[in-house]
Each structure stands twice: as structure tokens, then as C-alpha cells.
Amino acid sequence: MTAPLYTRDILRLAASIPYLEPIEEVDGYAEKRSPTCGSRVSVGVRMTEGRVAALSQSVEACAFGQASAALMGAGAVGRSEAELREAVTGIERWLSGDDEPSWPGMEVLAPARARKGRHGAILLPFVTLLAAVEDAR
Image 1 (cartoon, rainbow, N blue to C red):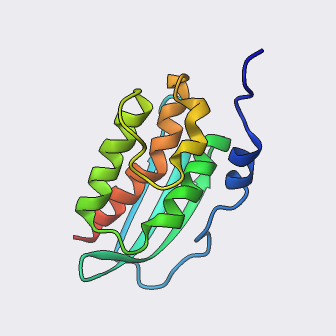
Image 2 (image 1 turned 60 degrees about the horizontal axis):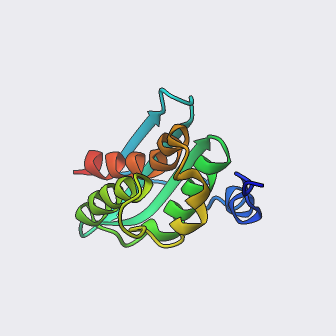
């Protein structure tokens, strides 16, 4: 018997997305859509000294995308653009089967590693956050 795709931990994360309320004085904003699954994420950021000081996100995605957005939100504040770029690259490598996850808690999403069709939804919150930070420059 195979392990379930949506574990209890994934569903718990999907139901706990932080920073859903809009923030005032957004420095950067991005909205991205996954062409493979139709997931959509938007992120607004306020930056201080080159680091994420506050963020807001809107997430329309499957449970993997929602869980990923919860993980992104939990660790985004205080990160620099370089750290976020490195995280996206590390998550891409991890999803491809290499290395350890480059973001805290990503191991919960391990059931999706073998399903390439879910990779876009997992990356989407992180790619969108990075784009919002780049927009703030």
C-alpha cells in the first residue's frame, strides 16, 4: 500500500496560512499563477534595510500550495533577497531529489517530491515572494 498524498501534517499546514490580512505601505508586490495547475498566489511586502519586515499573501491553490504558503509565511520575515533566491534554488533541488530542504519545515511536503505536477504549486509562494522583494528594489 502506498502512503497517502495528503498527510495530516500537510492538511494542518494548508489550514494555517499566516499573513492573509493586507498590510499598509507595500514596497513591493507580485502575483503569479502556475500554468500547470492554475494555482495563484499574490504577495505584498514591506522592506526594512533590505529585509522583509512585513508581508501579506493571498493564496488560491491546492493543499500543497497552501501548505507551502504557510511554510513560506512562517519563515519569510527577516529574510533578504539573496536568502530568498538561495531558498528557491534549494527548494527546486530538493524537489528534484537532491540535497536536504533549504527551508524550515519543507520535509512535511516530501510526499509531493515524486509527483512533478505538484512542484509548481510548492514553489509558487516562494517565487512570488522573491518577485515581490525584487519589485521593492
